[in-house]
Structures are given as structure tokens and as C-alpha cells.
Image (cartoon, rainbow, N blue to C red):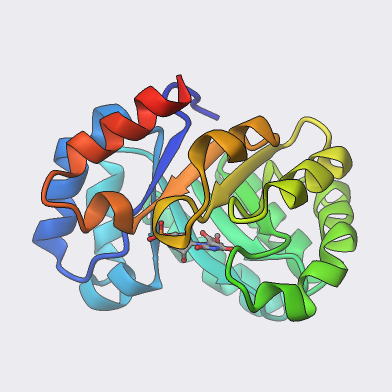
Amino acid sequence: MIRNSRLILALDVLDKERAIDLVSVLKDRIDYVKVGYPLILAAGLEVVEEIASMAPVIADLKIADIPNTNTLISEPVLAAGASGIIAHAFAGRDSLSACVDAARERGALVFAVTEMSHPGAVEFMAPLAEGLARLAAECRVDGVVAPATRPERIRLIRSIVGDRAIISPGVGAQGGSPRAALEAGADYLIVGRSITDSPNPAAVADAILSEIR
Ligand code: O7M
């Protein structure tokens, strides 16, 4: 993985021109752009191709279906130029492996979600997170998603996934601290609204970068 800034921009905006403007301004400050359902549904899959021509894209479709459907979801988004895809681990070994296989065929990265960052994740995901992280490692994913809102959980998941990457959402708008997430073992911070909703996205990105340097 590219590792310069350790920032992944969550590009959850609905307007394609705004999305492209944000990437133009921010591309030298981030390692990847994470594009998910909001922008892809609003602007079409072509938006992945367009953004991928400016910065590496991780497609966040949180893929969680049967293996055959997972393959059918993964392939077009990889063909559109995504450098990585994100799948849920909870759908099980065969489903996650289908995403790993699709990514490998394209030389792309694959990440598995373990425990999510929002409060509701403690209801069902947290009790399963260690098993999900173990499964992700066994399926040879490149990395896992773990919550910056609960740095102690990043620490636990790090102890399971070894040197696989941990990408961590939940800083800023969801209340997590960039520095605490990295100190707990995250490799990358996924940051959306605190940058994209700001009147000065570059200044916010720069402030986060200086906090974590
Ligand atoms: O910084 P925010 O809160 O505006 O955006 C965070 C982004 O990370 C947004 O795109 C979420 O969908 C995503 N995310 C979480 O917030 N929590 C999770 O547990 C997982 C993700 C994610 O990216 O999963 C792959």
C-alpha cells in the first residue's frame, strides 16, 4: 500500500463535480480516496474511473453477499479502476474469499470490516470482532477496518491481524482522535465529513496531518 500521509479521504458527497474538485485539492495530501454507495449511486460507476485517474480509489461497497454475488459485485468496480475493495467479514469465509480472489486477479487490495465505529456496533459486531479479524487474516486480506472511536479495540484487533494494514474510520465527525487511533495501532485514518464539509478542506487535512506527524 501507498503510505505517505496515512490519510484516506472518505468521499461521501453526492455531487460529482464537487467530488472531483475535492480530489483535485486534496490528492497530494492523501494516500487513497474511499468511494462508496453515496457517490457511486449518485454519479454512476464511471465516477470510480474518473477519480481513479486522479488518485488511487478504494471502493467501499461493504460487500456482504453469497460468494457468487460477491464476485459479481467486485469485478465491475475493480474493472472501473478501483485499487482496493472492502468486504464484510461476517458473511463468512467463502464469501470473503470470493472478494479476495477477485481482488488478486486484478492486483488490487482487499479489506475486511471487523468492528464498525458507530455506537450500534457494540450490540452485535463487537462480541464477534476477534473472530472476524481472525477470519480476515486467514483469508489473507491486505487489511481490516477497525474503529477510531474505540482505540482499545484497534489495539485488540492489531494483536490478531499482525502486520496487516488497519484502516480506521471515526475520527473527527464521529469523535475519535487521529493521534489516539494511530497510537493504538491504526496504519491509516479514514476521514470524511470533517474535511469534506469544511469551507476549507485543505486546511483541515493539513491540521490532521500536522497532528499526526
Ligand atoms: O469521517 P466521517 O464520519 O464523515 O466518515 C467516515 C467514513 O468511514 C464513512 O464513509 C463511513 O461509511 C466509513 N466507515 C465508518 O464510519 N465506520 C465504520 O465502521 C466503517 C466505515 C468504513 O469505511 O468501512 C469500510
